[in-house]
Image (tube, rainbow, N blue to C red):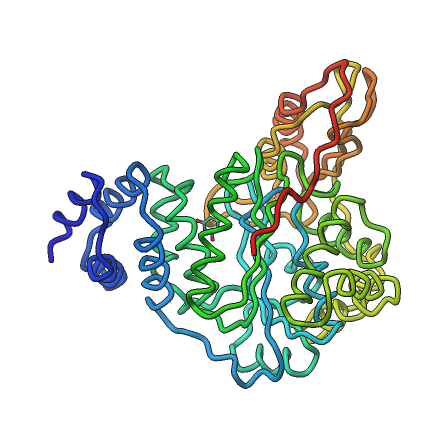
Length: 433
Ligand code: URA
């Protein structure tokens, strides 16, 4: 086979065979195919797309490009939850302890922040001492002992995705449906869980900006997961506004802890209960309504919060910080952003909110950047709220004052204010079975 012929075939809109796709992935991981040819193929896929069969073949090739984990020595049903990426999305920190406290095993591998979106691993590392780089055997031992562990992606897992993602990031080919499906599901399927619930985001803060595109993404991921023998479900959820009020690592952990105490923002609580109930239903713990009640009770009884504290302790973290979040260090500087006009907040550009948080130090501009765990934004007004000129709409937090002006400018530009009250939009748009 020749890479030139494969690029040409896709460029001309033809479907690639499974053998061609596997040959490409294999050669790219071995370093036999140069980046410029892989980039040309990604761009051809971006413009020409791939059908479900090709996308499925690409996903399985990515899955098989490295080590495949064996979780069979973890006793009980193993579940995973994955979000396609959003702003203020701390649901894993709430949902995983809820479902683990109810007897399903959570052996979760999560990622770091990507572009304007945050990552669970960066958030967990804002907890004093919390280790996310744990050898697989120890990780499985923790899951067997306390029911839950969340660690970073194993370096040997789906190496094709690591290479392709870095390439897509710099060649404007991230937001391509077959490339996103194969990236997410290739990694998920290389781990060894029985049930996977996907939170597919839609709107201005997500990679897929329209509900139609997000639905297609959800359907393909569910279908491919089922082909690999997994129990699958996907929720399509709104990312036209940040989730909850906190954006930034320790701010989000504190908000997750408050949600586990039953004191979280309404939108975050609603989505976490729904995700937990869908996971529990897939794991055959009861009907959806029964699972929803179980999830609510895990919060009101305090058992879900205690499970989070147990996980923190098992992973070397200071569990006291979970039970008493006032222990988290505060940012050195803060700054209040005020509304410049009166009216209702009718919409926001969520991606810009994510970038504003990044400018304060909560994310990375380059892979080498070190995150400031205390940096971020706490929203005091959100879409639908009435504000007057001078009403505080957000507090910015950072270890340096130099980022405040740019973050404020972005935030104000990204916040649309009008005299008409907007209509309430649902948070959960659809469920794909
Ligand atoms: N998250 C991933 O892991 N991959 C993508 O392509 C997009 C979001």
